[in-house]
Amino acid sequence: MKRTTKDFLVIGLALFAMFFGAGNLIFPPYLGKVMGSKFIIAAIGFVITGVGLPFLGILACTKTNGNFENMAGKVGKKFSVLCSIAIFLAIGPMLAIPRTAATTHELTIQPIFPGISPLVSMVLYFALNLCFVLKPSKVIDNIGKFLTPVLLIVLSLLIVKGIVSPIGNITYTNIDSAFSSSLIEGYQTMDALASLMFATVITSSVISKGYKGGEAISMTIKSGLVAIIGLGIIYGGLMYLGAQTSNILPKDITKTALLLQVAKKILGKYGTLSVGIAMGLACFTTSVGLITAGSSFFENISKGKLPYKINAIVISLVSIAIGSFGVDKIVKISVPILSVLYPVAIVLIITTLFTTLSKDNVVIKVSVYVALFFSIIETLPTIGIGEIVIKNIMDIIPLSNLGFAWVIPTFIAMIITVLIRKSKDRFKTVNN
Image (tube, rainbow, N blue to C red; front, side):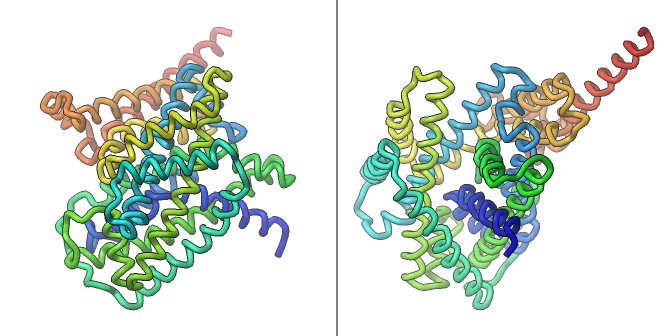
């Protein structure tokens, strides 16, 4: 095997492991169940935001030396800091870390020890996390390297057997807007936000292997493709399995319970146990990594005023409180937060990738703030603010009924700003 081929495969698999977390497993089957016969359309939408956006996020970061702060810094220094904090809180103690703990409780601990309460489970989970976070060791890295292949083998068996021997018929479920709903559901993986933070790690890994310039970008693209193809196959397979359960499992079944039931029906009780334990350990390695990264981030951004160990303890305590709500409630909490953060991230990624746009900070700033404004306005009714008034306003804006009211205003603002900037440049040229 060529050195370059080996390198991009190794980096690609590492990237896959970094992205592969709790949301990547529990959302596709549930979405497949809800969509039924429209699961293919749903899979395309989910893959675009759940896989495509993270890939574009990494590519965009390579243009800014793998640094998200350089990308967001074009909007403004304060914005860059606040945006970085918001994303770290989302992929950290507010959403992602508690979700790993809640998923572990529902998939791994509760099936084996049904009497244990969520709070006790959370306390034990994060106490163990802190043992590794406060005293880093290579044990957790080795577990992570071993677990990803094991989990992939279990999931591959699950998907292949589910395709060969379906557990139910795929039926029509009378769902409207399957594509747009799935695009928004893809936000729940949080991988696009994570990609903006992981890009530094990937870029450093590529550079450390001796690649520079165009070769480094090519290697990053190839590595990203390995990761997104792997994620795409897993998502599509799990969604297909979920679509088979539309008529055989209750409509109000929780996301984690659905995954356990699918595993049980396809691989028996040992399948349930295997998926539960492997997923629990995978969640554990993910949360250790996120707590470590978050603690270091807040120590650096505060210039040492917030010490690493204190950060780790605070993040764990907040995660215990939120994790006790359970997976489904955490998902409900995350919807408005992600509906505000994702449009901003998408605009930053797009404006960075297009060279013409990336050179003009004013265009980027206007586009980002317009997207932020409309995403906030669109999200307010979901938290019970101005439901009737805002709904009447949103009805005028194209795509608002699909959850994308920010798209057209942002595009118009971007075009107008570009035209104004060009006309000013021409005016200066003529006068000179």
